Length: 142
Image 1 (cartoon, rainbow, N blue to C red):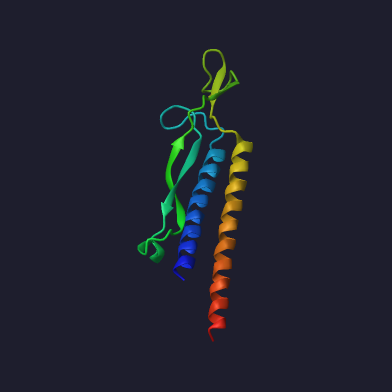
Image 2: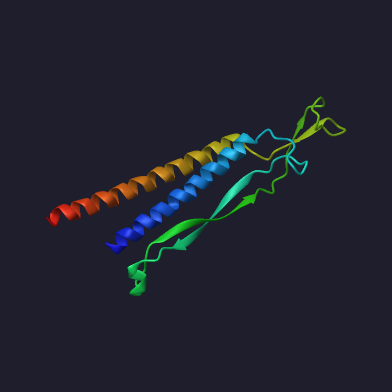
């Protein structure tokens, strides 16, 4: 049973990580046209960095390998240069009429959101299968 609990914990940690990926992608899309932030610069695309996280299980206490989950190690800014768009009437245009635009590629962000949503759904399905396995085990014990 402890192995199943570790698997549920690992899937639950992945749900949190995928939720964070979706939130960051939504933020990137929402700011894809933001030419001026609090620092006076255009918005910089952000990306989620994931890292492994060992799940504390009974198996590990016995010296056996346990489940490994995932956690958000951080959110980093993309260092790609800003896009330049010619729009001389824009209030943020430089002397040549170019506006520095965020380094956000909306189609790429949509693909990232789709991947995160599918990973989220896969982990929900895994948790459901584990729950069904536990229920079947309990029914057999009756």
